[in-house]
Amino acid sequence: MARIYSVCNQKGGVGKTTTAVNIAAFLAANAGRTLLIDLDPQGNATSAAGIPKDQVDVSIYEVLADNVPAASIVKETRIPGLSVLPSNTSLAGAEVELVSEIAREFKLREALREVRELYDYIIIDTPPSLSLLTINALAATDEVLIPIQCEYFALEGLSQLLKTIDLVRINLHPELKIGGIIFTMYDSRLILNNEVLEEVKEHFPNLVFENTIPRNVRLSEAPSHGMPILFYDPTSTGSLAYEKLTAELVSRHKNEEAFEQGSVNDDRAEYPEQNREFKEEAQCQQVQNADLAGALEL
Image 1 (spheres, rainbow, N blue to C red):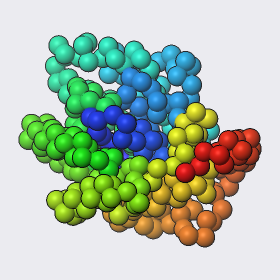
Image 2: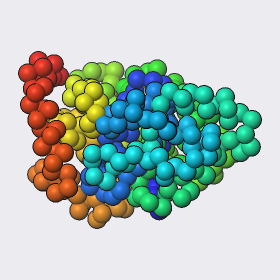
Image 3: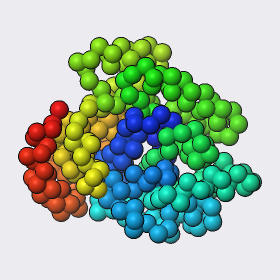
């Protein structure tokens, strides 16, 4: 049965979707079958995983509003082991329609009851708000991953999110856990970034992931090509950071043995054979963008 993680932060622009997509990709490549659920009406996780939003006719909206079986609309990506439960703008109307529903906070949990048996991991990308969609994600989740940017406004948002998680624990889901806090867009050269990092570590010493995600142009470029960073530029600092972060996430739950069957190590071992064709395509795309990236690389 799949372990479910929600990547959640009501503040936008903190790398939430980037984190969800890239953790899902590394899990699929190295740890097991992974389902990425796009619960954001913007549908950015859907397109970042290689599925054009204009080709999504049936989405998670129909799962929540019309009780369509989740398994029937799951789309396979070009990345072996990674599937997507897609989203589109119609999901924006779901909150209004669910208001009168009985047990509306548990719609997603019930929808995932059967599909959960088909995967090893499920990653949910939530909208940048503390909305009914986010509450549904938290009620269906085993652990919450919280990406935050290294700035003081992010600390205020973290406080609000932790209060919401506590309320969900009390009223809806007593077993809900915080899987960890992920620092994104981190620049060790900036005093402010280091101050925020140390302050959060002081208050939540057991929650902060040791591996941080740096600012990296490649991470920004990858979604426009419908590729996780693992395939767009596997040797970039952004890819290496998400690789280590995913390994840390898995090791936190004593799954090192399953993860070590994949490719995460310092020697950059060969990708699994089934990923070779997609990797070669990604490398061609990488060459086409080399000049531009070289000029922009941080």
